[in-house]
Length: 351
Ligand SMILES: Cc1cc2nc3c(=O)[nH]c(=O)nc-3n(C[C@H](O)[C@H](O)[C@H](O)COP(=O)(O)OP(=O)(O)OC[C@H]3O[C@@H](n4cnc5c(N)ncnc54)[C@H](O)[C@@H]3O)c2cc1C
Image (tube, rainbow, N blue to C red):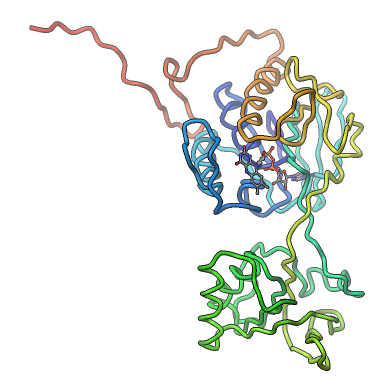
């Protein structure tokens, strides 16, 4: 059982900034995210796109913003359960909550902050009859650990950045990489498209286009796939892994069944006070919540996280008064033993 003060569901920008604000109040956080890496939409959908409306950053790449948020909260030593979806919630007699993931990992905390954005990202699966039988038996929709593919034969299907970037990366890891796309044109960064062309010319990536995977072959695990090119007979490509990278679609998912008030796929909160939901002790912040005038912007998530942490402090330390201090005055005491503070004023005569 993982225990913490604030259990955050979603390690997007809102969840990550919550760790920092909670840390200032000496509250520990643990984050659960269905994705294998932190950053939410910023790292999963648009890591290389510049954002122009983060205060004090005239321009910052979404991936760099994630790195900065991780750097900023590192001193408060957040725990992470990544690659697991928060599935069920159980209220305990002492008022705390136990959240269990789809892989059975249990977490306990007196306060839950749902920072689930648009929901947990679910992979778009190709419409192949028997594909679910091969999941984790050679079919993977998200690459969590590239080492799984070392010296293995891999078939990637897809025409976007993920398919291009992973084909490039795995061409140095796998024994054989085949990239299949239903068009001749790929939609991605020019650098990536050109690199795949280069690797194809060098014989390091087999490219099959325009073509579609029409069947998976195997018994208890993937042995090959059937590929059909337009107006041609199907061919069999032998492989150890089939990785369809057709993008991810967000779904509010299991959170929708937790008894929370939901409006248009978002969680209703009390925005006049602290972004608490209809269940005391459960807050919803960032893109996942709704209230009159809501804007789904990163900076709004930061603001909501800051106010929410003050309310969490009161739940965790009932009756204790917290006096807001500027970080310029109080400095920051990291849980890792580090201390940051502005140079102190001295009293010194000038001769
Ligand atoms: C292409 C694009 C461009 C954008 N440009 C801008 C911009 O310029 N400026 C701006 O302010 N905003 C922009 N946005 C919006 C911005 O990305 C979002 O407002 C922001 O990501 C919201 O952060 P969040 O942390 O609330 O949620 P998210 O970033 O969506 O993160 C939520 C996380 O929660 C996880 N999660 C959800 N449910 C579960 C569950 N049950 N279990 C485990 N994990 C779960 C998800 O996997 C996800 O990682 C853009 C969005 C897109 C798609």
